[in-house]
Amino acid sequence: MSDRRTIKVVKKVMPAVVSILAAKHLADLEKDPSELYSLLPGHPAKKEGGFRIPRELVDSHGMVNVGGGSGFLVDPQGLVLTNKHVLGDPRTEYTVILEGDERYPAEILSRDPLNDVAILRIPAKGLPVVPLGDASRVELGETVLAIGNALGVFNNTVSLGIVSGLSRSISAKGGPRGKTEELRGLIQTDAAINPGNSGGPLVDLRGRAIGINAAVVSGAQSIGFAIPINTARRDLDDIRRYGEIRRPFLGVRYLMIDKEIQARSGLPVDYGALVVRETPHREAVIPKSPAHAAGIREKDIILSLNGERTTPEKPIQDFLETMAVGDKLKMQVLRGGKEFHAEAVLAERK
Image (cartoon, rainbow, N blue to C red):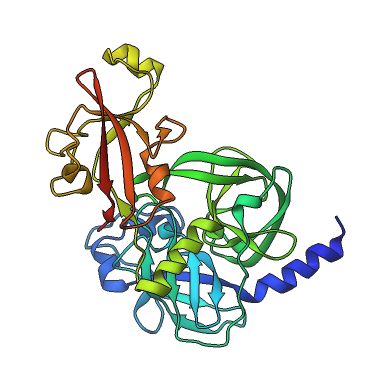
């Protein structure tokens, strides 16, 4: 591939890539400064008389920068895509910085409850955008570029690589206080992705976003992951139509069955979703949910959905990702050695 083609793509995309700055009030941090330790030399412990943040870290508005990430404009009216984990703290104020150092307060429109995607809006119009591609057409070995705000310091960093894998699943944690979540269907790339790159676009050689840079594997080299852009496209459609992200909800907690779990638990099948509570205080079937209305009970095994088997490779959540609120979900269920059909009308996840 020629350098000129790469340069052309970068020039096309870069004006629409933004930095996202996270800041907290000084008074809040001095009450609980633990998250700031990593930003200060020597990781100082709280001293006698109270912790004091160096004044040079405090801006004229009494705010202290506590992190950063990336994002990219997808609508001339100021819509920005980024990762949910970049905006993980509701007590933090976020600022979007454009290529020319223009700064705007960020309004968080929505955080996807299932995927690591968030949508912001800034009060600006006539902005450049990154056109969206189609992640379903991405091929192994395809050349891609990752663009972002590397490590929250080096603005507009570009790295080149290929698509190394498709439909990957990982468990990721958004920051030291974030909870661990499983991310599925990811694009794997060897293009360098660093913590500050989170939320920036992964683009193809036509300058179209095919993913949102999301995660790296700690201790590994040349292994990064991006959320497929098709997920974010659905979220954008919801925002434009409803003003929020709407995700379908079934209302069961479950364990995917394989041969090992079948043998260990003495189950009659080696596939399906066993409806089971996570803890004694968290019901297996959520009251008043679509599953509850359809008659699903704890210890039922949901064998198939809409005629397709549920397996560890395709759990219930993967089916829901392709459906919408109000859709009907047909279930083949095993209970006490007998199979039966059930149907649920999917509700909106709150």
